[in-house]
Image (cartoon, rainbow, N blue to C red; front, top):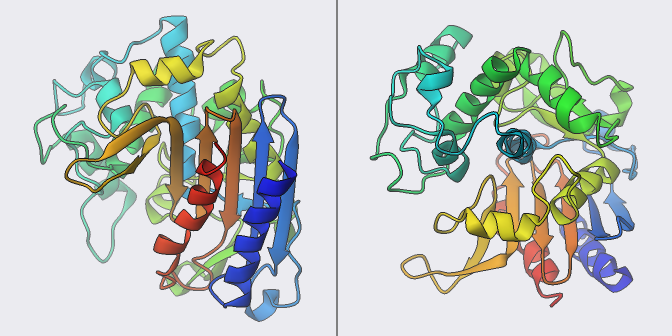
Length: 344
């Protein structure tokens, strides 16, 4: 692991040196839950310019949150509470689609759009209305299209199943049993994750939300939902994020015993529950590598699992600070996954 963490650290350092990032924290974990973590660079710019990044800083994980939502569903599948074939409407009677299943939402092939309506002044009421419409753009189960809407609906289903707010639900059933004390949602009520504000790395400068966001979820839809959505809202340190990834390598008893086989058995094209499989060879006829899984987050985050080496990787950045216009990350991030999956 020492060679791998050095390679990842060097990639991050070059991005910092080139001005593509202010800083980054990278980490790897093996099946024994042994970890290597390194931080490079600074927390940010402006008032944060003199703050050196450390491994104890807390990041907005953005869409990596979807994996925490997924893990709660895998617990419920194992317990027999629901199955992938359970329809959303059977749990949420007001949901306007009789066909969409929990499994389709986890696979991103439900037919739901990627996002809700795009209007200048989106409100929570508009957002909730769009979620409950269940209006599809493709026939359910036929086309894979990454969907925040689908995972927001999954969050609503969890709240109905477990009869508690989403932040409290995932904290009680995923984070607490796995001793992830440096992870959580920044909600205002029950289930709030508290830590000193200066431990949170800043994200975007959003004037209508008061300026640079720090310790407040970057994703606007999660913000409207009170800080916790099935798609976004989780914050964590690198240490905790690696411990979470370790659960996908060596699961606890509340999860499928052979996670690798379970996820392969529930493959849907280039995806399995919550995760994207590594592919190569072009979009028209991709080769899918079911030993390699990854997920990315808008704020500049990555989680990956390599079942050949039984290792996991976490990359945490705030590439959206102070603006999301840092589009080089959309290409740069694959330097980390390519280096990680090269460890055959």
